[in-house]
Length: 191
Image 1 (cartoon, rainbow, N blue to C red):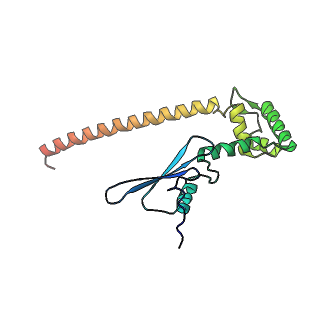
Image 2: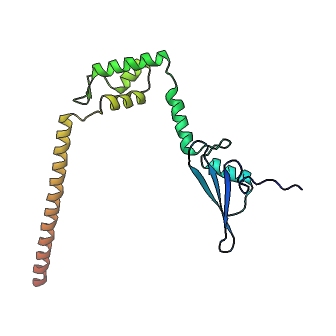
């Protein structure tokens, strides 16, 4: 039976294996060098593995193999692909219409839509998703703000709730004092 080449042990194709003596048994660390950046990934091995299993561990950690591409470079490549995709003319028209509707019906100073308008209606009129409209509005025009009347009512409610809690605590303390006095008096007088 022919002995197979161990690409990590032999240091072939950006792979290498470092073995150190340890307590009980030696420890090993496999290294994989990215072909696009200086990053070198490492994987501690508790048992001896064939190179195919080590490769599988690296792919599970997000690496692409042959050529070796680290998870960071892979995500950058995916971002570039997503950004380089050219939108269709229909998508560009829908985005322009969304911009116009938001500019016309959303007041960024008040953080409110005109009556009858909201992200859902803009999405329905343009054919875009409500999520896209909301994200675009929040980024370019601002977030929705609570009307002043609602904020004032919310503040009044919070103040009244705090007053009610303080009053309850005061009443409970007074009741406890009166019960204590009654206990002292009833000990003097036998009923």
